[in-house]
Length: 190
Image (cartoon, rainbow, N blue to C red):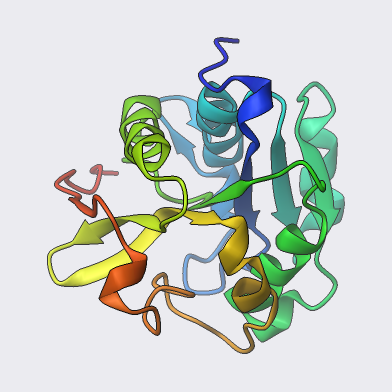
């Protein structure tokens, strides 16, 4: 594993993977892209920028998915409130951040087009001004992956309900953001 973040920098990645994938019809976390389950791909990409400071939040299929992570250095958090939606997974992940964490990278397990290089660019933008939220922008939508400084953790911990990908971002003022960058990756064909 290549570690992209210095352990002293305090960046911790939270991979959100608790959903039931009801619209998808099967466990999205197990869907194979380029021959590899999305769960493994997301954890590996998170580790590229955060080293062993990775937490994966599981929920609906935790019993089925947890054994797949036994060889990973990632911590596993079980979100028992996963039916509420993404906000509950964010709360579960933020609640487990260590005291030494200065920023949290939020990412979704099913963003197959997000590469380790993309995450490294995001981390690079965050390092330039670590007191700001740094996020991806998809056209007119701001969303994850995104990096939140410690000053935003209480806002993340207060989120409720089934929130969109822009969770925690839609209510933030423009002054909270720096280096928003456009996301231009096509969705991979199945």
